[in-house]
Length: 287
Ligand SMILES: Nc1ncnc2c1ncn2[C@@H]1O[C@H](COP(=O)(O)OP(=O)(O)O)[C@@H](O)[C@H]1O
Ligand SMILES: [Mg+2]
Image (cartoon, rainbow, N blue to C red; front, side):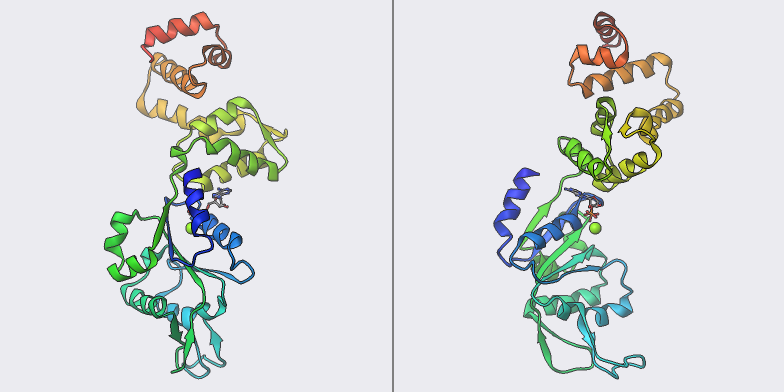
């Protein structure tokens, strides 16, 4: 993540088109807004276009705008997002969901840096930095998008790693979400956050913390404030029909991983002495 941010810094003041990749919830919108907020265009608007949710038939008028009288309900001229951006940043979220016909129209506008409002023959300059995002990996995206659009939007690519591949970030993210709610977390519960696989990435972490803070009456979260994370483990035991020995083995293994094999700390969490822990570790052949 640090290496990624160092490269981000280098392009912040260069107007190259950026493509942000990463699983859903990994922070693409967050990064796009941060890039805008740190760059020379920050005084101007940041406009997000959610390519997945704008209906195909409205996309062009949303993007390019229209003149009065272009269609029945066009009672007045309306400016499109490409015009409203006025020197700011235009962010195409989830670009892979754009219909092929629209991809061609968007490509032309980005390439020529100008476009026309619907119902007009005057061209308008497109003045904005273009950032796009996708949760589809680059090797698939190249097939889902028109090639020419893919290469046009993708001068520099940043891939945000899933949260499970940057667990070192979890404590800091968790603390920042907790601080907003004036809450804290105990060590064991923090260990559970670090160990969880977070298929929904930062978004899921934030939701879990927000929910826990709402439910928890004290201002310190403990493992029991995180039932969705604890019951994962119990639910897995039930569905796999683990024996008590298997359950014990897995729990010990997880705690050892969590404590980076600090036997004294692990024994303390498990409520047994260090010698018993070492015996059990040998019994179960835990590495
Ligand atoms: N580095 C970060 N620091 C703080 N909050 C973050 C960070 N990355 C993501 N978030 C938060 O996580 C949630 C999901 O991020 P988002 O940018 O919407 O993900 P994506 O667009 O990749 O699906 C948002 O609430 C966002 O504010
Ligand atoms: Mg997003």
